[in-house]
Length: 246
Length: 36
Image (cartoon, rainbow over all chains, first blue to last red; front, side, top):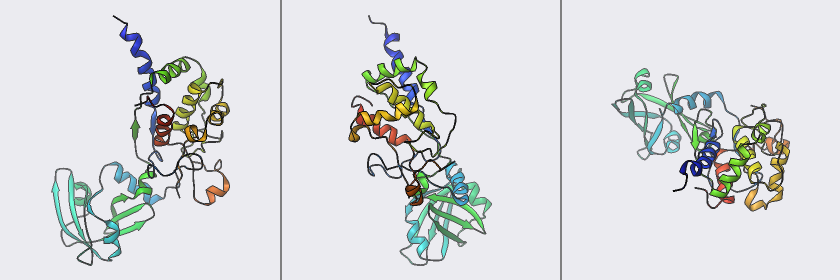
């Protein structure tokens, strides 16, 4: 019977490497399938409102269950039609000025309670570039991010685990046993590091450059060589991945 | 956060490029059909 521990080891090692695809900030794609290859990326600037709102969103406090906030916000005055609280969550039905404008949202019951949110209360739905803020009595109750807001959520904690194919596993395991990953780590961290430069590095970039070092047929001893790996393969299959926002 | 390594014209156009979780996964899947 084969030694299973020897067989499993590379899988554990490589999974550990690629499990490092954890990012806070612009980790989330603005829209999967939007373009491929160079010149794309994501990231951007976070406003105070976004940061505050993201903190709420990070608590899982805000979600649109039904309806479109854009329609409600465009209708002008927004009233609370009903508030149903169950456990830690409150489901609030918002009604706009017209009959067609309505949305059902959910956020923490604490937020609803703190704002004394009751049926008949008037609230404001403020549109910002990254989503909508629900404001009552001058207090932001919840942030509902749009796609840009989701992409820029500074508080998002996202994890992906990917198991490479067996050939890639062997290459990654061999590379991890060397000092190359340490050399490829740059202490000048920047969440929005440019993918094709050496000034900074974000965490995903380290994973990517480490992967490049493992997969490159040429020796990779530093970050420049890891980034040069893309030029040794076709654009369609190995263009340095990035996302952009606008 | 710093933006000074981003290409100036793209930065002025509001386009910030960076490596993301999804983009890494997409690249690995493109290169390695056996990845799952």
